[in-house]
Length: 218
Image (tube, rainbow, N blue to C red; front, side):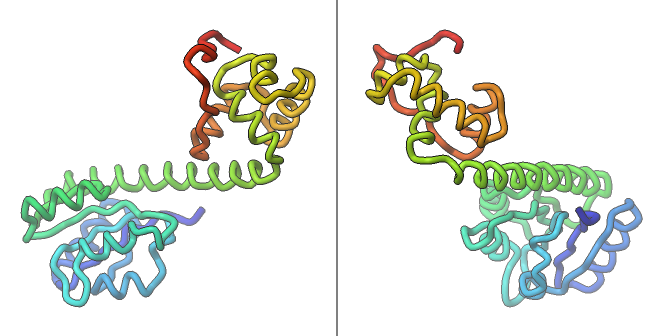
């Protein structure tokens, strides 16, 4: 993975240069942009790092860029630190609710900015690991048959093989066979791992009547 970059997006030349120097002096790789449009057109939003983003800019404001980058059109969301002399409460609240790491005011406190950058880069690294893990999981899940997927959803409820067999109206031996295939295809050995994979992929357990829920360990 390439070295993470702190992307500085601000239309004010003096501010952009000042923040760039400050961030570089703190030991971070930087790349400045004169506008949100320029940053968007660069395609750099897929690179590791974070964005230090001004609020008020011509063509496209900082919040508008955030809304664009955090829409369903973009698969990955770079962490954003807003830095502005024009931060009002509604703008700040909306930015934070949408996932901004911080909303700092100009002139910025150097220690606060460094702390926000470190937090943002850590968040980006974790997000990328999770994203890669999810991609691998989805690739493995695609190899499961419909029946194997069905059995898997029952396995993560915590019920026994014989109970799964009763629910699906198949033999317990057939359940064991499908269960084994699921484990092999996913490259795991425990139900704990299976539960984690399903949670990561957003796969919910099969629904069971209250009187059939099994609360013990498998």
